[in-house]
Length: 309
Length: 309
Image (cartoon, rainbow over all chains, first blue to last red; front, side, top):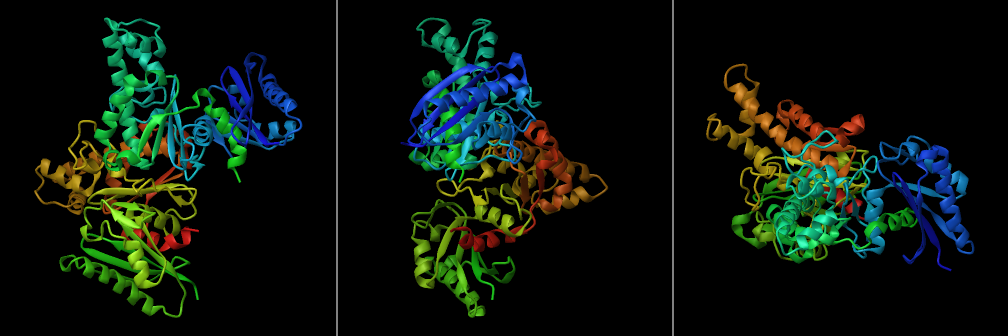
């Protein structure tokens, strides 16, 4: 029987958990509401119940431990989530130890972007590569860094939070207090905002704008212009990353991936222009699509207990 | 008798080598001409002779090995320096194995910026810190990254080459093919170029411009404006690094350090503005001066043989 681990991903409204064995096979996955409206105890009960039910299916196998991926800062020593303004119920309490006590198992907390990078490295497009960067582009932009096969965490797990790299010095204002953050110029949200500015519609999603770009008639050109601008902003950030890391692999993941053919050429053009390391290392530097979609964090969370030793 | 290692730093015109013991005490240092005009064999003979003479002084002690810091790309597996256009004689030859055979000792090659970061971590301002970034600001700008106590190398040792981070999208052209590189807006060379633009003089060094800033009369204001602009460019890069790494320590080293009081406040202001992680982590994130000066690379080179195991 192959040993397995449980990966959990905490979201503002949803809770996901999966049992994944050491070979990287996802055995079983659960997604449920986070029960936020019922208060803190219910939220924690929900996590415990999800994990317990998964364990019930595999009671004859050995469970290595539980990894929990969360947005925000993670204070590792204390096992506390801090500064994740989307999870008010779970912040600033000794969550790791509370879960560990109730479940009688080892629990590790990790930032969700870091977990996703680890997941791609273990079971996704980063397999076999010790040094990689993952950029996840959805409603917001996050990411993670793997160096020497290990997560680069930073003090509170916020290494790899590439969404707030400045790509346009006088660009759009950001809630973080900066302006011109990557997130404000290249996220799915930014793509929607650009569509509004282009009078394409008030509530278009990145998917809508991708579909518009696919058309052969009129608004297609505007939609493609949006993906070009998005790609160029991304290229600026990618160049900084290549100049900083000189890694062999950069993965782009997240909800915007379907539009890859519209933004990637522009991204690569700017990145090559602004990174001699990218030009100089040629085929030794790959920029490609992540492959685990929104499961990357679950894979990475499950892998945490094997990675840490 | 404490074991020692030998660190070597290769420059375009000079060769430096030092015997440093495991406690971090520099026992003996040699600096000499690189004998470039005499051709490749003489350059290599010079390295061998410098190391041999250092060993002669400490023949009763055990020598752990030899670390060689070099500009440019390093192909670790082959032990070859590549793409260091300042060292034409030493490129694309099996230098590591040539030196190792002639000296009968273990030899490790490393990029000079990486070696300097390792040196600061071992014996300088980074002592006791497992995660740090070093930015070295001299005629050019380089640097290095230490994560989990180890060098983050990248494919060819070019991780941490921060000089080519874009800080001004439409900024000064750079030899690397990009424009607005940090090196073109914040190096000692850039400071000199700004002084020319400000009609302060045609051949002023960063030191001259620091001394002008120290005056109480007229050109002082212009000189301080130059350090402000330099500091702001540096702050832009620093913000990117803090957003990327979330490390507890960022060290600034190199020839511009005497002007710290003129540029650092502006650097910090921009970095804080553009990095919520810097504001959010407060006193947990330190930005401070490197302490080993131009010896950092020698310390780091010597430490390579202890670091690698």
